[in-house]
Image (cartoon, rainbow, N blue to C red; front, side, top):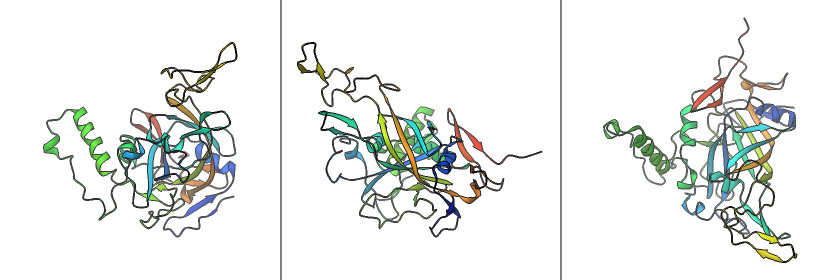
Length: 320
């Protein structure tokens, strides 16, 4: 049953507590910011190799944790108790944080690690450009969040009309991506779950899950299974010949540690996750029917995605 959020905030948030309520937030297939956090270095070093390269190029924020956010629209509820699944490209930086791989000591192979927490937050009309900007740059090139005021230098505006007037559309897009990677995405502000209060710079010790300012539903989630092929170049595949002698492959590009074919394809992971806690602004929650929808035309509709940078809006139905 929904309860009021304990956060002190100008906005009123309902705290959802049941699996059925969790699932209702995903039924409309909203666009989501997927936010993840990882310590600069794992306590036991398990995932250092999985993030090698990408992690070294990521700018830690002032809390001492790498925070990243991506856009997710390929998701689907799988039951009525808060479970869902989504597709995640292995090349995304978020994949290195959300689905790293680790040694399976019992089998002498590697496996995708599950049990990692992340957050989803739902944007509304007026946030379309922020969604597009977040989706246009990778966290592997630096933090997507603008530097805290007084930390990390000053921002430079490179989208000057005189400078871009003679550029092609492709050149302008490239320059914009470079600016976003260098300076962060303007207007991208991390907030506490179930609140509109920004995260403070004094959160130093451990990574904190977060939502994005301006969003109207926040879901704390956890992965429980990840399916996808692991490249043999990372760990040679152990094969058994007809004489039951063990031999190792040489790691051809088309060899994979998994014996079964990929569920989606060789480039994507299938991530199974569950919502374990959730908050929604009261003006978007029909507690009687357990529906996630704007309760009036006075609040902006939340976003869904049609493709080709085109958004749909979920809004209050008008009865004639």
